[in-house]
Amino acid sequence: MDGFGGPVAEYGRAARPLLGLALAIPLVLLAGVACGQKPEPSTSPEPCDRPNVLLYVVDTLRADHIGRDAASGSETPAADRLAREGRFFANALAPSSWTRASIGSILTGLYPDVHGAQGRDSALPAHLETLAELLRQHRYTTAAVVTNPNVGSFYGFDQGFDTYLQLFERREPGRIKSGEAIVRSDQVTEQLFSWIDDATCPFFLSVLTIDPHWPYGPPTAFDRFGAEYSGPVDTDKLAIKRDDLTPADRDRIRALYRGEVAFNDASLGMLLEKLESEGRLDDTIVILTSDHGEEFWEHGGVLHGTTLYDEVLRVPLIIRYPKAVTAERVTSQVSLVDIAPTLLELLGIDAPYPFDGVSLLQSASENRSVHAMLELDGRRSRSMSQSSWKLIENWRNGSRALFDLDRDPGETKNLISENRERVSAMSAEMLRLRRAHRQRREAMRSGAPVQTTPATDLPDDARKALEALGYLDSPN
Image (tube, rainbow, N blue to C red; front, top):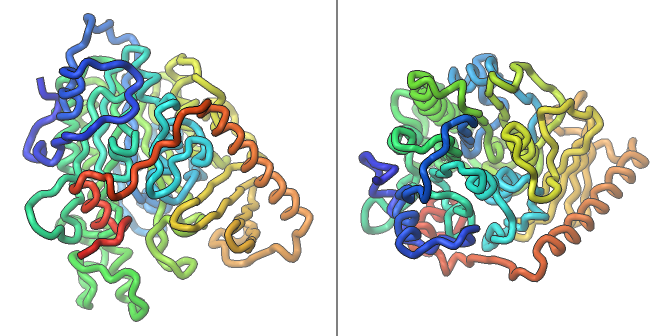
């Protein structure tokens, strides 16, 4: 039986080669997976004596845009509920500022320069064991619904998933329009409802929604932040990189983003309500996070994937599972590489190799160093956050900046000259870690070929979707 259905099922036709599946799968079964269908279980399912897992990732969601008291003025009642009832990590950092590198870290527990999916053409290596593979080995039914081609099956992110539904295919022939490739979160929720209704317990369901990602265009009902604006910026044409934007234009752009966040939160709320109405919510480990944030001119830039400032690294992270996770607010710095070890500890599953992250069920160290890295389009930068201090190094041009986030949360004052010993020590640690990561990546690869997928090799619909999202230059 088809695990997904509804009015947007046509967008999920995935006649693609599925890369790097951990298990040998007969061709007839592979065809079912490629079409978004659940394979028939080979044996009778076990009684559901283990929790389900819902990993819900909202693409491009800044940490300061959840909560009614957020400075942004966003409205996110579903996220607020999870924060009240779960463990809310107020200082969670993404390991990179763009999707593929960060999602790779979430699924593997490894930093981007260890798992290797960092550049435009790089894929997630088949020799790594993802969360989906590990849970499937422990008789979990696994499924993913993704709306960003950067984590498509052609980049190896389908590894371990019985079902991998890719919602970014062309809606109509001809030249793609701005926003056409983006499937809204309410449509994603329809697909999730369909799958959950038929899912074998226990299940691991991974979701990546994309509403807050540029171009920003919330449904009319959610365009309620600054909707009185009457200037040239609208939901169809966002000239976000123009130099002549007025303060009112910029406020309108931020308001559209907030509308997208509120809309996505409403979709999440519907999913939580379904699980609760069916008595499944408290038996499900719910993890809410984002892959990275978004810049709105804080340091002169916009969007993401170009810097490592906190506006693109600080993301929400909440874990709700009342049977084993106490509800509390944690202020220590943590990383998205911590999700995999935390989940495996909750499920009593051994790690396949040492993770870069640590379990968030344990007390976090205030002096822990949390790292991020960006190797994309010629940029080579790293950051290290330790206590209140953060060092950013540009390894392409040699520039460095040190910030005291307690006194300067906006990262505006470079304190390099006043703290040379601290900078030297932090820089040495970053260099040591880089070398260790390189050695570890090569050791884990053990002769396996480096996997790449050039843009020229992508399915046409995926390449067009990447162009519409601003990741590739359109030839049109």
